Image (cartoon, rainbow, N blue to C red; front, top):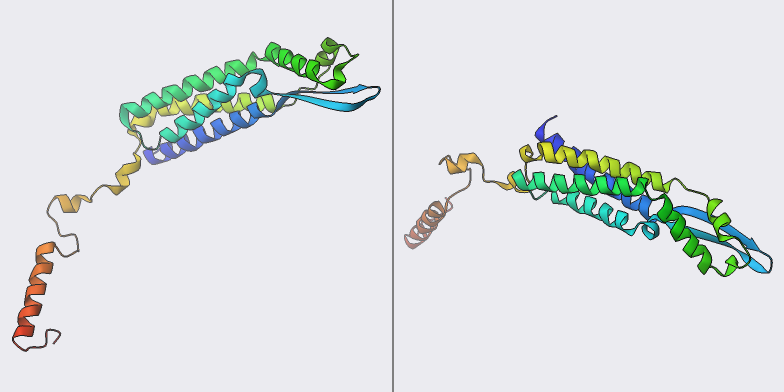
Length: 204
């Protein structure tokens, strides 16, 4: 893989990883419907950011780290890769082990619902649906681990954002750049005024 392609893969991989992890964490990880006589049917959803808020925060760290790949270089870029790797690994572990936290958060949401009167909260929580958003968050986190490892191991060789704006080597070595210098412009102006003073047409 070329250095420029590696930079693109690391950048887009990190952005995709953070975006997927954040999207998955912000969606419902548990959902239940409660129907009690005399009370309108209620649908209660508990998002991942409610059950494990720090997983969503780590997804933001992955996104920020991916953006930081662009202006950094060398050792600093490797440090960014390590930060992304660790944040993504922690988010993956938190997502995998969030079962009890999801149940606790859902139980609180059920207890706070007006439709919860007369129902067994524990039974409702046990019967709740478990959407796949949690596993999307896990997939994004694992992708972030791979992106962070790539940046940490190879990122120091990749070009930086400012390298494309460096002066061409031909100018630094004294080779002509194809543009007139200031001294040439001054000389042309002097010749123009001299010709006009002598009554000659400077454009002839």
